[in-house]
Amino acid sequence: MSEPDVIVAGGGISGLSAAWWLAQAGCSVEVWEQDARLGGKIATRQTDGYLTERAASVMLNFRSEVSRLLAASGLDAAKIPSAPQRKRYLVRGGRLIPVPMRFGPLVRSPLWSVGAKLRLLAEPLLPRGGHVDETVSAFVVRRLGREVLETAMEPFIAGPLGSDPDQASAHAVLPQLVALEQRYGSIVIGAGVRRILRRGTSPVRESFSFDGGMVTLVRALAATANIRFRTGTTLRHIEPARSGWGLAGETPAGGLTARARQLVLSVPAPAAAALLRPLDADLAQLLHGIEYAALTVVHLAFDRSAVRNRLDGMGFLVPRSEGLPLTGCQWMSSTFAARAPRGKVLLSCYVGGARAPQARDWTDARCIDATLGVLDPLLGITAAPERVWIDRHASGLPLYHGAYASRVRALAERLRHWPGLHLAANYAGGVSVRERIVCGHALAGRIHASLAQSRPPAPITGLAASTVPAVSGGLG
Image (tube, rainbow, N blue to C red; front, side):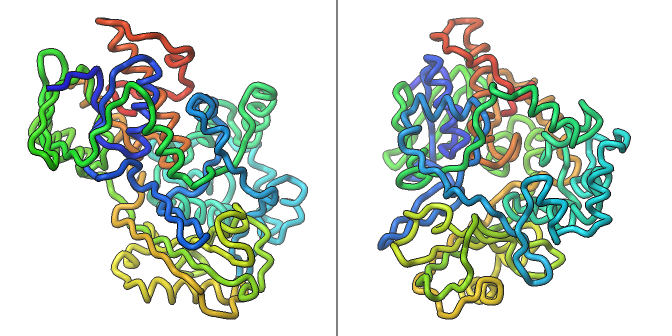
């Protein structure tokens, strides 16, 4: 029977990040993953000069924790920055309109009406408001106006996050904007003050992937010393033990038992609920109530001559008011030149999410037809795609819907009854790779401190000084 300091159940990016930070602290760690490979939804496909990503395709980083991990793991040398042009588009009235990223272009942009622009300028004059379970729609309308919600914020929430702003929790989905209002009374004033205070101290904001795709990140984390990886291992049972937690699982070779001083469940909410139901029905019910959105990614390859649009940006998002079946499209070969052979175009389009749950049941042919029906008039497609790849995620993204902040607090409260048990998955703390690394850092700091009370592991500089607000009870 193995007895590491920590066992992490789940080898997706959340579990791998937590395990990596724990290993840096000198903790002995095992990662149990039921699949034959690590990485969870992150997977890279390379075919005839094309590189497609099953899930995450770009990292946007402005956090020091991520920068430290990339430097220490040797991944800095593998970073591939996105192309210098950073244009982003929104569909408006059946046309692609560039999204202004600075104040001057914003004033001149046709994206918003004069009334909407005046409403934005008046934001610093508005009083504080809101409540802990306020929705994204209510928050944005209150601070920035309905037009900004419908044309800008809704497509962001529906696209990258797969959520519905009318149901999504502002505290969970837009924590930085909510925090600016709470602290400074204004998003605009708060952003300006924070920019001044952090000048010269915060990491440079950068957008990148890796040579070989996002799987390169997974491979680097999987090469970490002091971590034992058990792939093909399914966790079946957990129970409190005198010195921590006992586990029982199954492997291709038979049963497996282990004991660890600390246990991290880094699995989807339904799987965590099933494991915890025999111990704590209330905790399991809270997890069981977390919804997920189905998502389908349609990758299309064209000859460059078959696409009339200049493709001079990263892609576009689609507001729901347009009534189109896509939530967005990434122009991968424009963002990273090596993602397609010379003279070819690679587009990755997103179908489904909370906006269109019915797309879960669409056939591949219908997904392709729906995608081309959107792309043809927007991009000027003149020929059929040369290659098509489709990635389906039945439970693609957790939905931070309803009274989500209250749910997270209730989860943390229940976890206090189970010392040494932690939850770490993308249903708390954010869904991006950046946020998963940051949450892993914060969780590792709490576990490191707990272990140090009985047997101090080797110290690691800066581990306990996380800037992530820690949720007590082991929820990371």
